[in-house]
Structures are given as structure tokens and as C-alpha cells.
Amino acid sequence: MKKLMNDVESLLGESLNGFAKAHSDIVNLTTQPYFISRKALSQGKVALISGGGSGHEPLHTGLVGRGMLDAACPGQIFTSPTPDQMMAAAEAVDTGAGVLFIVKNYAGDVMNFEIATEMLEGESATVLVCDDVSLPANHSTGRRGVAGTLIVEKIVGAAAEVGADLATCQSLGDRVNKATASMGVALTSCTVPAQGKPTFDIADNEIEMGVGIHGERGIETIAIKSASEIVEQLALVIEADLNITSGQKILLHINGFGATPMMELYAVYELAEAYWQQRGVEVIRSLVGNYTTSLDMAGCSITVTVMNDEFTKLWDAPVHTASLNW
View (cartoon, rainbow, N blue to C red):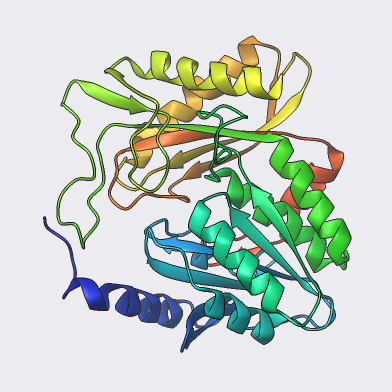
């Protein structure tokens, strides 16, 4: 294993310190317990808080700022943050309108955010993101929250920024989640520093379909295919799940898992956009890049959100974070 680090124990702290210093105009870092918060809070605005295990950067710390999150709670690599982190973050950024937790559907995240919600004295609500359609809707633990989390955070963040109340933000987040579907493919595994070796073995002529973002295996290991065939296989599942039909408008997000060059991600975007155009579906908004990563995994995911005028206006609203800025 080759990593740019001093040791496993110091990696998260050094990374968070470096992030906060590099973006000191946008965020503050609290270390006891760890959370990143927005430097310029807006009084009387619903506070948006998300978080999860580290290793998915820039999700979530890179999305703290105007028009998105007010705070993010980073756990150790692929490990849920603790309730005390969430409570401390909520107390720091709640300016009187309540707190909305945006939670990816993983057991540890869900449990710890629920504990924090029960212990908070102020008003709070939760949006549970479960956009990974590689798993069936009736899966025992529910569908995982993956790259669609960013879409929820951006659209709800824009609504909160202009004064939407807590109930409205929660309802909006639930609607965006239902309109969003993602599915990913891995070319390699990732290497968790504490483990020191790839999470799973995969041959040079194989790919893993339907992976999550914590280094877990997907739903099947298959022989490598052309990019066009891979895109079609992913898009077919998304299309069926969202029941996408000709004439609809979508946001198309190609997300890299950390080790795939932008050249390849844009090639995937070209193929995915062509797939939808052939079906009479209009891609009206796009996002390409490494946003919800899995350390050094090679591969990508496709996320589609079925758009309407409300979602489009909120997606287009100004945002100023370390990783999204327009």
C-alpha cells in the first residue's frame, strides 16, 4: 500500500486541518468533536447538516457553504460520525429555524443521526437519501444513499437559503430523493489505509456492477465490456426504476469514484447523454467529476434526477462551497 500519509491515526485530522486552511474564507473547523461549519451563518435559516464516514471527499465537507450545507460531520474512513459530533454541529449552526439532517441510508449513519435527533432540544427533521437502484426497492436494509446525496443537498440548500421552513425543506428533500436514481461500476477495489490491502479482489478483465461507496462488492462481477455497453447497462436500470419516458427533462450526473481520469468521465457523459437523447429525454443540467468518491477506487456512477421547474430553479441558484461554486 502506498499512501501520502504519516500514519493511519493522524490522516483524518491532518486532512481536515488542511481542508479548513485551504478554504478558510468559507468554513471553520471544530476539532472537539470534529465538524466543519459554514463561516457565514444566516440568522433564521433552516440549518442543513450532513455527514458520514470520510473517504468520500468532497462529500460532505466540500459542500459546506452558501446555498448548501451549514455543517458536515466527518467520521473516520468509512465509519459513521458519532451523535456527539452531530449534536455539537447542530448547536453551532442552528440559528432559530430548526435543523434538517440529510442522511445517507447506511445503518451506522441512520442510527447515530437518529440518536442525535432524539437528544437535541431544538426542532429537527431528517431526509433519508436512498438513490442506489442497484439494490431492489424491498431490500432488507433499504437502498443505499450514494451520489444522489449531492443533488438533494444542493436543491434543498437553495430552498433553505431563501427562507423555506423546516417542513418545506424536508418535503422537498424527500421529493428530490424519489426523483433521483444512481448506479455505479467499479474497475478496481479501493484500499482502506487501516486495512492496508484492497477491500475485494477483482481480475484485470473483470468489473464490479452495482458497487456502493464503502468498498463493498456490487451485485455481480462480470467480464469487462466497452464503455458504451457499461453505460447502457447502468442506464437501463435507472430508466426502469424512475419510469423515464420521452419528453421528460433530467439532470445527468457522472460521478467518479476517485481514481478515474476526467477524460474517461467525460467520455461516459457523452455516451450517457446520447443514450437519453435517443429516447427523447432532454438533459437540461449536468455535473461531471469526482464528488462522491470511494478513496482510490477506479470507476464511476451515473445519477439521474427527473427535473421540473422548481428543481431546476433551485439547482441553478447561487452556491459557494469548496467543491461547487456558481
